[in-house]
Length: 198
Image 1: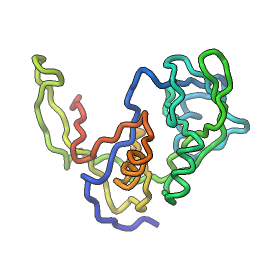
Image 2: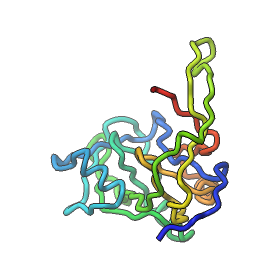
Image 3: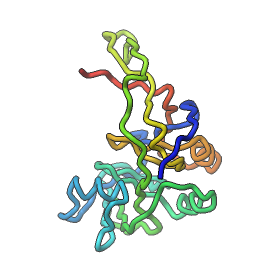
């Protein structure tokens, strides 16, 4: 059961794909790997009957964290060891088989699920700002800050918000940086700007 956890939004971070060019980017090979199944895997709501086969379609570097064109994330044995040693909560793994761009098998990877869910994003608490996304371009309106219902968070180190957002505590961010785990982008929720579209 969730209880209220004091929240410092400067110490909670969006855990996301940095969209780097060098690391491998993966796609599922099985026909049954639909967007719905991908979402269920991402949330830990379903376990596949066989390892999910993922093949690289761009990039060239096999990093500790690999992203797919869908929601799913793969982590190496080294990252799994880091998560287990630090007793981080709110995550699980599922079996995957990862292949490089030439079809070579890349051992030692696991699919990562984020099993803890907090709530929807509360836009009413965000600040409205106007800025140019690139210097010299037309200014646009953004929400600054990602906020949620703290009473629905169970305090896990990894957790999701509605809309496929993965959030981690500062302790996770600090350990990833200390261990030099690359191909992950961390942005403080207090400083996260989201384009206002409506």
